[in-house]
Length: 465
Image 1: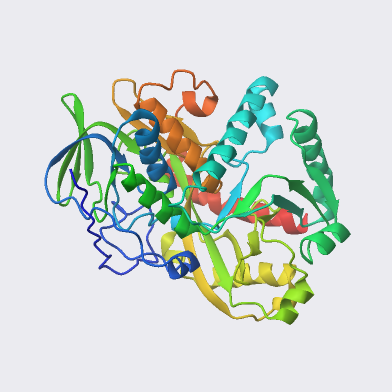
Image 2: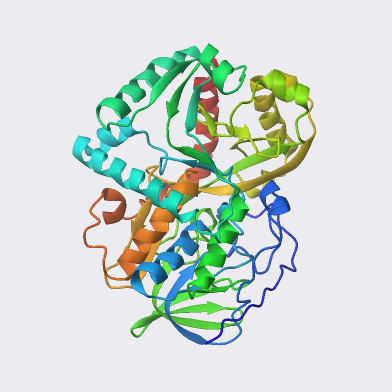
């Protein structure tokens, strides 16, 4: 059957105060966040428009970000299954067009040494192999002609913002080298300033050979083009209003009709509504992250900063800054933001991010900001992602919980979820494949009070104590 090539552009304004902990769903046909990525990606490729009638499908995927589209790609490529993707707004409306465009060799928030503490050396080594394979998959996937995402390969710098963190950074480098055989190295301040960038805060850094900057929206739009080329249908402006097990299948109700599916994959990440399904309810802690992009640097500014790299840069704060020089000569920087959606527009969050930019690069003090936005990050309660079937009696799967490190690993997560859907996930025995996303249980209503307190403790720990 010939594919539809109809694209319905969002007709409802972007809601800057949207909060996934409170909203019934992400909306229907809303405009994108005003990100640098959306402004510079060009028009989205064609999709299949909203669901307009009741339909029967084999596999339905809820969420059209990196994970959902990767799942559709790998279902088709590796298992001969043509999936149907359901998206509430425009393609990749959530995390996948609001992130920092940084691909790192990680998934979740834990370091390798913390993997060892939690699971032991043997499991940690297997998990490292999984993450390394994921980066290889990501590199291979973005070589597809459909995916023109401006990759800037070359590694990642984990930059110490104070002298007191250097011992732990050096210890982590030894663990990576000696336990995992992953060749990192420690850099001094002078080497960072000479070979990478004159970051005023940097006292040292851990260099990882795997890391890449990408154009976030072009990556997502490339995934869309490839998924539809392989036979997937991608229905935008089609939020899932309810998800119910009926008979031998799952019924997904959308405003335009009910989608009846044999199996369902949830790939909604930080935009997972509490009412989507009981198996995903309160399994993530949505955390706001804000990001800015400056005007193009002048030649004198660039020379003063000695920016010699486009690779991802991350500092060692608990509420870390992620930053880099973009290919067009702008600086992008992001960090954590407000606790609630209603507070996201408060200018103090932008002011704090600017203060971070100015501390690192004093020459940029007062520079014009051309783009400012925020988005929700899918942090799991134990800081690690899950790709899992939470109930063996229901053909429901999810892949989420990357904690801000999903740009790269989401490609592999989508592939692993496709394996599970196809009944070929029996060899996936790592904890991220064999256990559900944990819940905070009775503490759930108080999580944001705890978040408020922890943010203040992190500030004291990072900046004062």
